[in-house]
Length: 358
Image 1: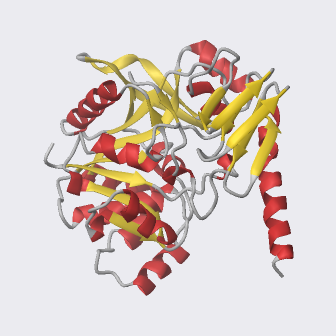
Image 2: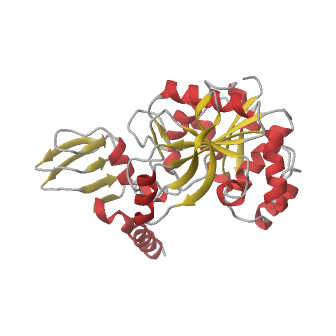
């Protein structure tokens, strides 16, 4: 695995996890699942088992570079790349790939979000090794797919051919289509057909295959980003980002490329994108409550997800199906079924703070 590299994308704002996740310290830097380490730290630890530690590059917003160094000490300067602007995943991957190209032109690159939960670590390592081995023998892009368990409209879906792509790899299939966040009825049809996986957002490809894909489908990004190096000055980097298209790698490349295959993941996976998805994956007490953090006394309270600072004691009575989430200075109490209103709540709070501070 000496030519294996990993790009960890850690630039998201995690706004669905407000008020625990805020702009100054978003979800990837928080212990979302209550294990004592942040999502970024857990992700880095996983990939350190697959490739040399110095082959892991974290791409984040400029404002989070120091936080990455604090959470993962000892990283070299090239291992933490700060983006001056948020431009979605395609530019992010291209930037990191250009840095890798300067050090290892034959690199095999794993691309992963920083804030997803993996529940069976050994299976994850085995699946990733299988994907790496396959792309080193074929000019393919491999994406990881998770078995859907409900018609979730917050995930992307991957349709695949039933026949395996290789006789000896029964869980690898040719991709037919990608569908991003379908309506619930369509998601139900996808699951009933048995022809779809959830898109886990993890990609594996060799550097030459990656470059060819960008040159074919995102030539403007390829022209701008593959000339970047570690010595590129900040003003040039800002100019490249300000002029480039904001587009995801799924829309820009994966939906168009004909050499994409999906490996059916054997590890438990969740993108932990919402409070509801956190409730689904976290262990429940006898009343159906997911108490992730905090000293909680719950009376006649059931089916709630509860996340409060460890220093806080919270007493709850008479709640059924609520989100109870707190930061040091803000508490949210919201029905789980109304989670889509959290954006409005957060905007209202921030607007009031701005007015009060004038």
